[in-house]
Image 1 (cartoon, helix red, strand yellow):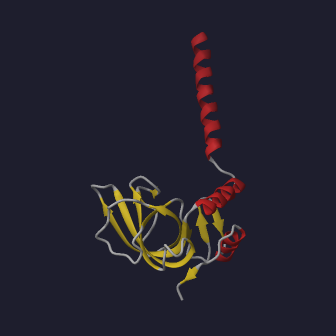
Image 2 (image 1 turned 45 degrees about the vertical axis):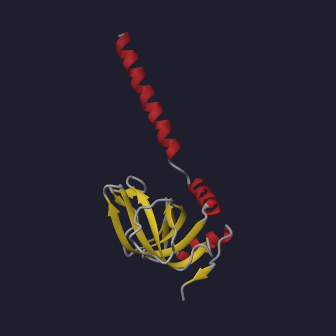
Image 3 (image 1 turned 180 degrees about the horizontal axis):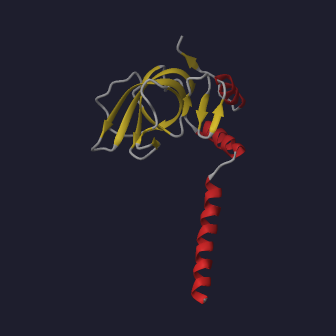
Length: 173
């Protein structure tokens, strides 16, 4: 009888531990917004553009995305309109085993400098290479998705940017 009680207590403890941890990793809407505000405040480069090319290096376990920049929110004059390389390493920011960014799709990237000699053979207008965290994806229905936050219109996303000190520095006409 003691063994059964002990086993039930162990199983209950495991269940309780798992339940509490699951609750910690699920952010509420206000927690997501706080994370987004923090990301906007700390990202040195923020821009909007379309993925035009994707190249992977299996031996380096990295993927390079070339993005055509159409709007710059932060980072000008170091960052200019035109193309730029965005590099991610395998298992970072992937969905179903593939890279999160898709060729032909439009995103807002919050980037940081990526120091590496990878993908030197790919020529872009910007000489720096960046990496990113949690890109904002335009959904093709006039809105955007950023993490678990859904913006029903791009105007609401741009308003959120403006409320947090971001405005367009340069825009492709």
